[in-house]
Image 1 (cartoon, rainbow, N blue to C red):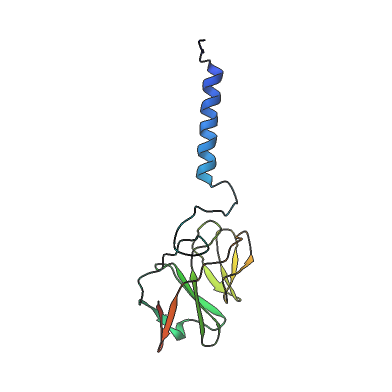
Image 2 (image 1 turned 120 degrees about the vertical axis):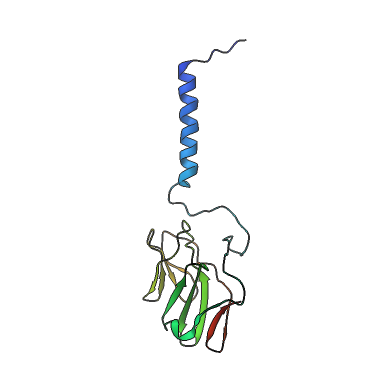
Length: 146
């Protein structure tokens, strides 16, 4: 049996390949299911800087707010006086770096996701997963990566 390649077959195959590449490049739209990686129980890769690195003095982290450390990809918050928390500064929706901390939330400028400063939980989507926690320590007046 002989198969003949027609113009229609070539066009259909080319179109299907192009559509598959486009879907892969766009990540499937607004879906926040990223590729699995190692590093944390949430499946999100953590990329904080070197352990022991001083991030800030405690007086640089406002009570009820926080500070973003873009180079270290960490956001440090102080939900209550003297209680410090740290989370990945990479949004779980499509991996943008969060842009601000205000009114009790960590805010992503890309699509409007908001996360609680106390536990990283999603307050406003499109993100559906919380920000992964990062390990810090407070020694004297310094906040350090643990």
